[in-house]
Image (cartoon, rainbow, N blue to C red):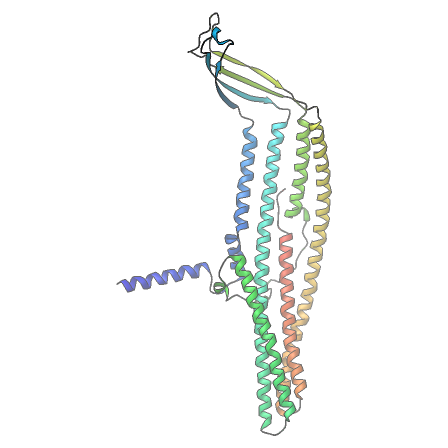
Length: 421
């Protein structure tokens, strides 16, 4: 019975592990794991929560402020013989202050908090987009290295096939010792590529596992198909909707609001107040009637530092607003240029992909024909080796081109991430 329970537990644990890490890791799995596991995502969520709290904090200044204070003191009249032991006093006061009119300072504070919240949300979107882009690029790099490893293995297998064909010709006496040595050297020359491809694949898996915070053993089997099944053309979109531009717009609005707040800071504050101070029941002073006191009324507060603090603050905020406007123009221009460049590069690689596919197809046919002709003795060993190397190089070129297409597409997806204004 215990063995049955243990077996059932093992099955359940195995199922849980499989649910966490798919048997064959795909691009969508990597993106999901990156968002769930990466610490930056958690930090981003906390920053959004913090920005929302700041809005509540800014609004809270519109509500009354309750203040309570208490003092304990002892009064001595010197010389002490006039009042032996001194007079002990205990005082307390409770006051309530309600801002009535601040000439725009409180409303500007709320506006600034809301703009900061929008900027934080856009920054969060940009951060998540960066995490997704990095995860995809690391996955594509691993898939590319896996493809190169496969190509290297196929190249070595082809070289061994060439050697077998050479051995078939030995029985007919149609080769010499020099041909045999050349064939052995050709087989040996394929092994460094295989070794390099193996190490490259291992390094790419380690980079991916480190980013996902997962062991390499759990991601060894990845989907290495880099071919883009979607052939929808990449289109240019209005850059004002992109998160980077939207954030620059909000930064410009924020700078303008902060400049307005600096102007409002020259104005006074009108508040209503009420206070209550109970008397000290243990204190009795001859000729003085001590009673509870209560006050209420209006207060006007106005401060103007003579050193020019407010003047300098306003100048600083004006420069900030000017810089934010210049920065917005720069980001708009650079974003539009980058979008156009990425789409153009992708289009060029698409055309190149069609040519490389045809080159690989023809190279495969050429190699098969050359191998058959070599067995018949109508093709030299050098021609056979050149035919196989051409096939290998074309396959590697195709894998590199697909990788570049994928990397450019992730860059464009990140750039075109939508933002709020």
